[in-house]
Amino acid sequence: MEPLILLGSGGHARVLLNALQLLGRRVLGFVDPDKARAEVLGIPYLGGDDAVSGDPDQVLLVNGIGSVAAIEHRLRVYESFRRRGYRFTSVIHPNAIIAPDVKLADGVQVMAGAVLQIGCVVEENCIINTGACVDHDCVIHAHAHVAPGAVLSGNVRVESRAHIGAGATVIQGVHIGSDSIVGAGAVVLSDVPECCTVVGVPARPIRVKA
Image: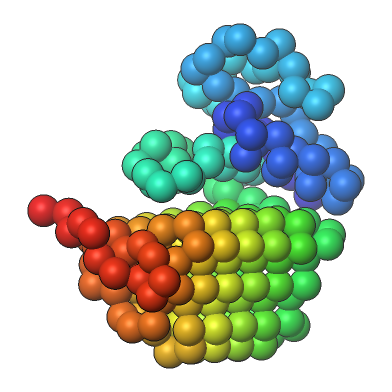
Protein backbone atom coordinates (compact mmCIF):
# COMPACT_ATOMS: atom_id res chain seq x y z
CA MET A 1 0.00 0.00 0.00
CA GLU A 2 1.41 3.39 -1.03
CA PRO A 3 2.72 5.75 1.66
CA LEU A 4 0.70 8.86 2.44
CA ILE A 5 1.26 12.62 2.59
CA LEU A 6 -1.13 14.68 4.69
CA LEU A 7 -2.25 18.06 3.35
CA GLY A 8 -2.68 20.53 6.22
CA SER A 9 -1.94 20.45 9.94
CA GLY A 10 -4.99 21.95 11.64
CA GLY A 11 -7.61 20.24 13.76
CA HIS A 12 -9.17 18.17 10.98
CA ALA A 13 -5.75 17.04 9.76
CA ARG A 14 -4.74 15.90 13.24
CA VAL A 15 -7.95 13.91 13.68
CA LEU A 16 -7.30 12.20 10.34
CA LEU A 17 -3.70 11.50 11.29
CA ASN A 18 -4.82 9.87 14.53
CA ALA A 19 -7.17 7.60 12.56
CA LEU A 20 -4.41 6.71 10.10
CA GLN A 21 -2.07 5.80 12.95
CA LEU A 22 -4.76 3.56 14.44
CA LEU A 23 -5.07 1.90 11.03
CA GLY A 24 -1.32 1.35 10.81
CA ARG A 25 -0.89 3.46 7.69
CA ARG A 26 2.51 4.88 6.80
CA VAL A 27 2.47 8.71 6.68
CA LEU A 28 5.64 10.31 5.30
CA GLY A 29 4.84 13.77 6.62
CA PHE A 30 2.58 16.77 6.16
CA VAL A 31 2.62 19.87 3.97
CA ASP A 32 1.22 23.25 4.91
CA PRO A 33 1.90 26.83 3.73
CA ASP A 34 2.02 27.72 7.44
CA LYS A 35 5.49 26.81 8.72
CA ALA A 36 4.55 27.16 12.40
CA ARG A 37 4.64 23.41 13.17
CA ALA A 38 7.77 21.29 12.85
CA GLU A 39 5.87 18.07 13.45
CA VAL A 40 2.33 16.81 14.10
CA LEU A 41 1.77 13.66 16.18
CA GLY A 42 5.29 12.56 15.38
CA ILE A 43 5.26 13.07 11.61
CA PRO A 44 7.55 15.72 10.08
CA TYR A 45 6.83 18.94 8.22
CA LEU A 46 7.81 18.53 4.55
CA GLY A 47 7.24 22.11 3.36
CA GLY A 48 4.54 23.92 1.43
CA ASP A 49 2.28 22.35 -1.17
CA ASP A 50 5.14 22.39 -3.69
CA ALA A 51 6.94 19.82 -1.51
CA VAL A 52 4.58 17.23 -3.01
CA SER A 53 6.44 16.27 -6.17
CA GLY A 54 7.62 13.28 -8.09
CA ASP A 55 5.64 10.36 -9.48
CA PRO A 56 1.95 10.62 -8.48
CA ASP A 57 1.70 6.82 -8.63
CA GLN A 58 4.16 6.40 -5.75
CA VAL A 59 2.21 8.22 -3.04
CA LEU A 60 -1.38 8.85 -1.96
CA LEU A 61 -2.65 12.12 -0.50
CA VAL A 62 -4.96 12.81 2.43
CA ASN A 63 -6.98 16.03 2.33
CA GLY A 64 -6.57 17.42 5.82
CA ILE A 65 -8.20 20.75 5.01
CA GLY A 66 -11.35 21.08 7.09
CA SER A 67 -14.76 22.30 5.99
CA VAL A 68 -16.54 24.32 8.66
CA ALA A 69 -19.03 26.11 6.42
CA ALA A 70 -16.95 27.24 3.46
CA ILE A 71 -15.76 24.45 1.18
CA GLU A 72 -13.70 26.61 -1.19
CA HIS A 73 -10.21 26.05 0.25
CA ARG A 74 -10.67 22.30 0.72
CA LEU A 75 -12.09 21.98 -2.80
CA ARG A 76 -9.36 24.11 -4.38
CA VAL A 77 -6.58 22.03 -2.82
CA TYR A 78 -8.24 18.77 -3.84
CA GLU A 79 -8.79 19.81 -7.45
CA SER A 80 -5.28 21.28 -7.79
CA PHE A 81 -3.60 18.00 -6.86
CA ARG A 82 -6.05 15.94 -8.92
CA ARG A 83 -5.11 17.97 -12.01
CA ARG A 84 -1.47 17.06 -11.34
CA GLY A 85 -2.38 13.38 -11.37
CA TYR A 86 -2.33 12.68 -7.63
CA ARG A 87 -4.87 10.37 -5.99
CA PHE A 88 -6.55 10.74 -2.61
CA THR A 89 -7.00 7.86 -0.22
CA SER A 90 -10.16 7.37 1.82
CA VAL A 91 -9.82 7.40 5.61
CA ILE A 92 -12.25 5.19 7.51
CA HIS A 93 -11.87 5.32 11.28
CA PRO A 94 -11.81 1.82 12.80
CA ASN A 95 -14.73 2.77 15.06
CA ALA A 96 -17.01 3.80 12.19
CA ILE A 97 -19.89 1.47 11.30
CA ILE A 98 -20.40 0.97 7.57
CA ALA A 99 -22.86 -1.44 5.96
CA PRO A 100 -21.21 -3.90 3.54
CA ASP A 101 -22.92 -2.55 0.41
CA VAL A 102 -22.13 1.14 1.00
CA LYS A 103 -20.30 2.73 -1.95
CA LEU A 104 -17.46 5.09 -1.06
CA ALA A 105 -15.56 7.06 -3.70
CA ASP A 106 -11.92 8.18 -3.51
CA GLY A 107 -10.96 10.60 -0.78
CA VAL A 108 -13.99 9.98 1.45
CA GLN A 109 -13.39 10.49 5.17
CA VAL A 110 -15.57 8.68 7.73
CA MET A 111 -14.69 9.64 11.27
CA ALA A 112 -15.01 7.92 14.65
CA GLY A 113 -18.50 6.78 15.63
CA ALA A 114 -20.08 7.63 12.28
CA VAL A 115 -22.70 5.24 10.90
CA LEU A 116 -23.48 4.61 7.22
CA GLN A 117 -26.40 2.27 6.73
CA ILE A 118 -27.32 -0.06 3.89
CA GLY A 119 -27.67 1.33 0.38
CA CYS A 120 -25.77 4.60 0.94
CA VAL A 121 -23.51 6.22 -1.66
CA VAL A 122 -20.84 8.78 -0.76
CA GLU A 123 -18.97 10.52 -3.58
CA GLU A 124 -15.41 11.87 -3.69
CA ASN A 125 -13.85 14.17 -1.10
CA CYS A 126 -16.82 14.05 1.30
CA ILE A 127 -16.52 14.18 5.09
CA ILE A 128 -18.84 12.10 7.25
CA ASN A 129 -17.72 13.54 10.54
CA THR A 130 -17.56 12.29 14.11
CA GLY A 131 -20.74 10.58 15.29
CA ALA A 132 -22.79 11.44 12.20
CA CYS A 133 -25.61 9.00 11.38
CA VAL A 134 -26.53 8.42 7.75
CA ASP A 135 -29.44 6.03 7.42
CA HIS A 136 -30.44 3.76 4.56
CA ASP A 137 -30.25 4.71 0.87
CA CYS A 138 -28.86 8.22 1.31
CA VAL A 139 -26.80 9.70 -1.53
CA ILE A 140 -24.15 12.29 -0.67
CA HIS A 141 -22.57 13.94 -3.66
CA ALA A 142 -18.98 15.14 -4.08
CA HIS A 143 -17.30 17.52 -1.63
CA ALA A 144 -20.22 17.62 0.85
CA HIS A 145 -19.70 17.68 4.61
CA VAL A 146 -21.95 15.99 7.16
CA ALA A 147 -20.73 17.57 10.39
CA PRO A 148 -20.36 15.94 13.82
CA GLY A 149 -23.55 14.52 15.27
CA ALA A 150 -25.73 15.26 12.24
CA VAL A 151 -28.49 12.79 11.36
CA LEU A 152 -29.73 12.01 7.85
CA SER A 153 -32.82 9.81 7.87
CA GLY A 154 -33.45 7.37 5.02
CA ASN A 155 -33.40 8.37 1.36
CA VAL A 156 -31.91 11.81 1.91
CA ARG A 157 -30.06 13.29 -1.07
CA VAL A 158 -27.28 15.80 -0.39
CA GLU A 159 -25.94 17.56 -3.47
CA SER A 160 -22.36 18.65 -4.16
CA ARG A 161 -20.59 21.03 -1.79
CA ALA A 162 -23.49 21.16 0.68
CA HIS A 163 -22.80 21.47 4.40
CA ILE A 164 -24.98 19.77 7.02
CA GLY A 165 -24.17 21.46 10.33
CA ALA A 166 -23.29 19.84 13.64
CA GLY A 167 -26.26 18.20 15.32
CA ALA A 168 -28.67 18.94 12.47
CA THR A 169 -31.45 16.49 11.60
CA VAL A 170 -32.75 15.93 8.08
CA ILE A 171 -35.91 13.84 7.90
CA GLN A 172 -36.47 11.06 5.38
CA GLY A 173 -36.72 11.78 1.69
CA VAL A 174 -35.49 15.38 1.85
CA HIS A 175 -33.31 16.84 -0.90
CA ILE A 176 -30.51 19.26 0.07
CA GLY A 177 -29.41 21.40 -2.87
CA SER A 178 -25.85 22.02 -4.01
CA ASP A 179 -23.81 24.71 -2.21
CA SER A 180 -26.44 24.96 0.52
CA ILE A 181 -25.86 25.13 4.29
CA VAL A 182 -27.96 23.54 7.00
CA GLY A 183 -27.21 25.33 10.26
CA ALA A 184 -26.09 23.55 13.40
CA GLY A 185 -28.99 21.97 15.27
CA ALA A 186 -31.52 22.65 12.52
CA VAL A 187 -34.38 20.26 11.86
CA VAL A 188 -35.04 20.06 8.13
CA LEU A 189 -38.57 18.95 7.22
CA SER A 190 -38.66 19.94 3.53
CA ASP A 191 -36.33 20.31 0.55
CA VAL A 192 -33.61 22.96 0.63
CA PRO A 193 -32.88 24.69 -2.70
CA GLU A 194 -29.35 25.15 -3.98
CA CYS A 195 -27.22 27.98 -2.60
CA CYS A 196 -29.55 28.42 0.39
CA THR A 197 -28.82 28.62 4.14
CA VAL A 198 -31.46 27.29 6.52
CA VAL A 199 -31.49 27.38 10.33
CA GLY A 200 -33.83 26.67 13.21
CA VAL A 201 -36.51 24.20 14.30
CA PRO A 202 -38.11 23.70 11.91
CA ALA A 203 -35.48 24.96 9.49
CA ARG A 204 -36.23 28.22 7.67
CA PRO A 205 -34.18 29.95 4.95
CA ILE A 206 -32.19 33.01 6.03
CA ARG A 207 -29.96 33.49 3.01
CA VAL A 208 -29.82 32.59 -0.67
CA LYS A 209 -26.54 33.07 -2.52
CA ALA A 210 -26.69 35.25 -5.60
